[in-house]
Amino acid sequence: MYKNKTLALVLSAALTGITWAGSALADDRYVTIGTGGQTGVYYVAGQSICRFVNRDSKTHGVRCNAPSSGGGVANVNGIRSGEFNFGVMQSDHQYKAMEGLAPFAAEGKMDDIRALFSLQSEVFTVLARKDAKITDLDSMKNKRVNIGNPGSGQRNTLEEIMEKKGWDKSVFSLAAELKPAEQASALNDNNIDVMTYFVGHPNGSLQEATTTVDAVFVPITGAAIDALLAEKSYYTKAEIPGGLYKGNDKPTPSIGGKAVLSTSAKVSPDLVYQVVKSVFDNLDRFKKLHPAFADLKEQDMIKAGLSAPLHEGAIRYYKERGWM
Image 1 (tube, rainbow, N blue to C red):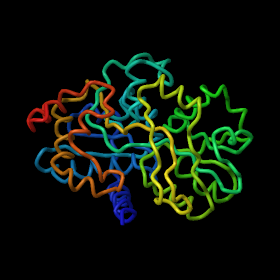
Image 2 (image 1 turned 90 degrees about the vertical axis):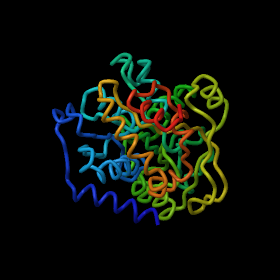
Image 3 (image 1 turned 60 degrees about the horizontal axis):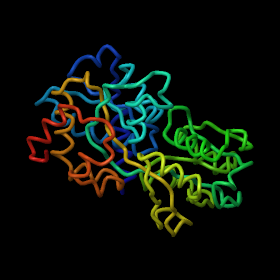
């Protein structure tokens, strides 16, 4: 069911064909949300937010666009540069940007990054061809691994894990940099042994991969993971539920975080207020647009995973609702 709804959102975006140049982003009537690959939940999240903003455009005059992007790191950089005025990102990327930590160290602290609300829980996900006989992180060595495109969440998280393991890319026989939408076909065509993703579940790309080739999720556990969790508070223990994907009936342990909609303090409070209002006034409908949104709760969304200060436009709405 959700595949049809997702497709409808994608087609709607394509048919609309709306793009706005960077100069237009200074106008407080336009919302441009950096999302991710078109097979991922970030893209659905951005399209879903825009769906509810745009349905009342005649009333409030705001228009919303949510183009595909390179993912969370790219969205941070897009907000910083003005390419986007909003972006979906992992909670750890929000924190790293604010503190000026890698992969944002060169740009320095992003003191003006602000949070609106959190969305779905996300899990670092490693899927391997069954014939590659990969059962844990260590058995990924000397295999063909898609580490993810630069700017993606899975790439940054995998690099943090690799650092704890004392690895670099040379431990893999191939370190591919495929985008999320390219991974499933590469796994099916036997061009890679492993695909990685930091994503909410269920996910269409992972369903495609597990349907077209015998593939299993790899547990993300061990001493290096325990050390990472102890050091990095933005990660928590998580699991991929069992039964969502063919051939993977049992839960798979891993690490995870929250997806967060972020912006800049430079963005108009009125614009932020309207985005937040459009989502929360339609939350029951919003939750039906992807299974990953089904368990969203207002009290969690305005607190969990918000590693940057709330934008004043969001605070205004939450106070109106009596939540703060």
